Length: 395
Image (cartoon, rainbow, N blue to C red):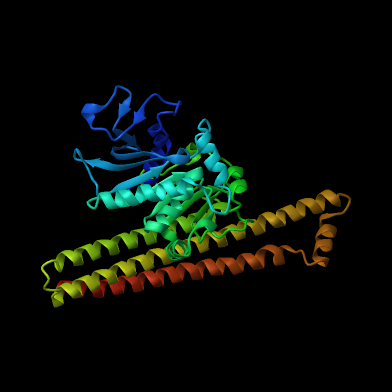
């Protein structure tokens, strides 16, 4: 699967499919190498990976898109095809008009071009596997394309009318939010005012939006983990929910991917038409059970980790609140002694015992309980995996 860093770079370079794009002289095309002009390229670098451009599309309403595959040992791996659509290019009038229309409940008119483009790629290239769709800003309509064709989709700073989804598309997205990641910064006015899909807005994102603290709409404002290439979210109280959603979606994506691998294995084993043997069936069932246990364990550990972070943040906030209360009390009653100030606070129920000591003890206990539950779940998980491994060895 293409990393999010690679997706970001692809989103940045897909504009160069457009011959009218003036920000770079280099243009990307799917022409054979022998037919390239001196300003054309059919290989694109994203992250540390080279991709072969398999297809490009310059469509109506200012749409630009391309399909690429990573080059593995000199050959494009068409089992890992990614399709990217360009965001709005301000110097393209047709593109700007499409963006303006995209603010309506029906969404961008470019989405119809994208739906047709991806559909044709699927029909014309049965040997390809389109694993990922992506877009930026206006081209977050790729979320709808992904829901339509049931393809995982990741977009950056994406404003999108979720109300434009058909009933079938909305149902699939609602049931599989982990397949659709929309990274948005909480104070990004571009996304907020274009689709109102904000914390106070009126459109349901089905749990696909990962909110990150920040105010930038720029593609380059996103940072990525050096080792994994995935979006890096700083550890802060306001990012706690975003981190939790991102982690849970990663877990489910990996689980879905592994199930798909098992399904492919099953297809190969039954290719002769004789069906599965008893041992083959047991093997597949045991492998699926192992995946379920591992996914459950990862999800539980993620939940516990986030719960502990929440409790720890609350403890810190409680202490800060008490100190702030004391500072304000001293500022407003400088003529009173410490005893008189504390006595006045005690009269209204504001004591360190009530505001700090007791709540801190409560949440410290919750942290201990959470860690204990996490350990117990890990033990149970290991016992189940051990039993399944024993069965696999016998089989």
